[in-house]
Length: 261
Image (tube, rainbow, N blue to C red):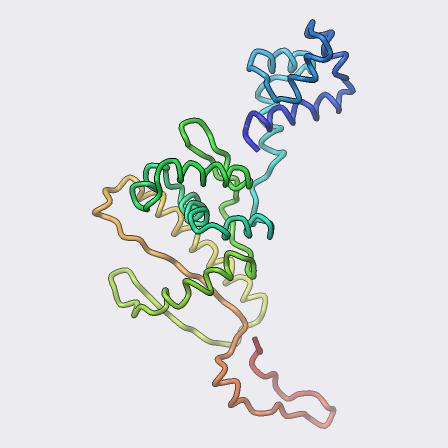
């Protein structure tokens, strides 16, 4: 939903809350009721007209803007239908990834083989999906939270597991600024959750550094991808070597086997 549509929706909601009908509003604005209905149906309200409606509601524009901002909190993830739409078109998926990195339209078209009309069409599609709010001059605002993630077993992550995981891990991770670590251990679940929160903060630090380095010349930057993952898992070949759990006289296991995937 665009900002103008959100403003109109907020005005409608406030009129309903105040018990003001279109007929009553028409009298206050010195308009025909049919004109008021048409204006709201088309969402064709100028700033001057919005001010007139706000005067009837005894509100100011700042209050209306706050209502709009709080009415649509940022999304932490997309719905299945939204993700299916994104992943159905590789160009749209690319645009979504670039939008998460807050690339401008010019950066997208300069880096990838997307024409300006194609890139604008992708931004329009992302706006329609509620992923971004497209603004004047093809600028946009993300409508997802900084903690946004793709659904763990959703269409986008399935796409990446199928098409990208092998390519990503085929490298030796020996280049400058590259690292691959595999750490296994048995820890309590509450501690695992705390570690997850620290890893999320690390991912946010990575995203913030990307934004901070946007102003650097391209020659001073390289593309990096941070993959963060932790799950209860034991390598299949090791699972085959597990002993059967022993039981004490009371019929309880003496030890817990490593968690199974």
